[in-house]
Amino acid sequence: MTAYKLIGLEEGTNGVKQRKANNSMSQRAPGVCSFHWIGVEQKPDYYCCDSGSNDIGPTPLGADLSVSPCEWQVHDLEMLLVASRKQGVPMLIGSSGDTGSNSRVDMYVDIIKKLAEKHNMPKFKLGYFYSEVPVEHIVKKLKEGVEIEGLDGRPNLTVEEAEATDRIVAVAGIHPFMKLLDMGADVIIGGRSSDCAIFAARALEPVKNVQPHEMCIVVEGIAPTKEEAEEVAMIGSRQLFYARLPEVKGTAGTAAFILDEVFPASPAYKWTLNHVIPVDDPTEFFQVHIVEAGV
Image (cartoon, rainbow, N blue to C red):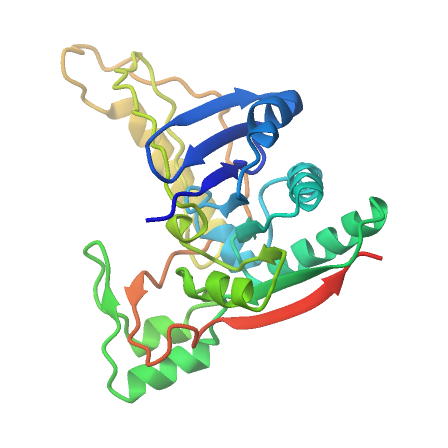
């Protein structure tokens, strides 16, 4: 088995994680200096970054926007690009721009091109792939009798739910990355991807079990109209005053409002696809492209 050294930058954190494929070692340190002193000097075989997350909820994907400020993303991409090009090893980015939608991939490709011009880099091969799947393609499969199985207890996808979906991204495995590497790509900008497809190994840190003494509860009201949503949020928050809690004998002092008003929010989205779709070709959903960047 071949072992590779990898350096991975968690997007937006200004931190470094170094991983070796043949063990579980993980080193983390803050700041640009740590990136160079701890990471780059180890001469990794690949520079990798997972830029996506489900923790931000479905709204960024539905609305097709990024959560992280563009400046943060440019900062991290610039460090990775300069280091990888100086060393002459591949750079792999997955789930570009938080969601891995097509527009986020295009944004990252444009950033890489501009950074290459900024640093007067010699020409290199810039590969990228898209992960968005047309809703019509999924609806067609369903109407042909293909069962799209739900994950984590989610029911199987229906035609109605698919048709009500704004944007679908498939989660890429290793295949688009391997295909672009075989095509000679020096830098790969990926659509929505599995973390494991980018990194050879992923070090997990234990989560401490902390029992809070106080908690903040956010009541979100979602309804067909703005007025109904506001009323739902108001009624829901008011019920906290009347909650009966263990070991609390009185009816007052259970909850306190930080602000006694309702704030309007952006349109709400919900996850509609978390399913396994049978395909004949593992690259069916991923459009692979390669261009040149540099001078």
